[in-house]
Amino acid sequence: MSKNPITMNTRINSKKIKGIKDGWFSETEAMYPGQKFSLALEEFSSEKSILFSQTSEFQDILVFRSAQYGNILVLDGVIQLSERDEFSYHEMMTHVPMLAHEHPKNILIVGG
Image (spheres, rainbow, N blue to C red):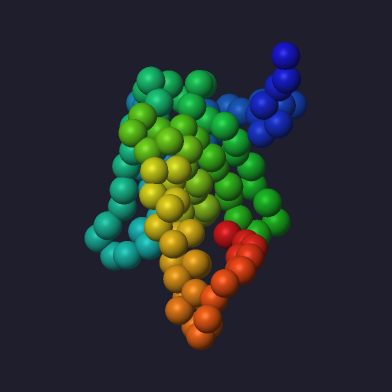
């Protein structure tokens, strides 16, 4: 049986993660004044839902599984993206080079 590489060898204490309370994640920073989002954790359980939590040299990183939006990436307390809406980011990355080229035939877009 293979182990999940994200959570392997990582002990996560959900009580110390900012924004997690009573089965919900709430943004801890406001990206826009007067607006913060909250999402329910899968099964309302932080023990089962938190996939990764670490502070790097540059930012706080949190990845958790939500009840409705799949895996969620949070940087510095602000939701960045979810599995449910990731297609819109890929479409934006694709349309710009496709429309910038006169006759696109074979294209490789790397990144994202």
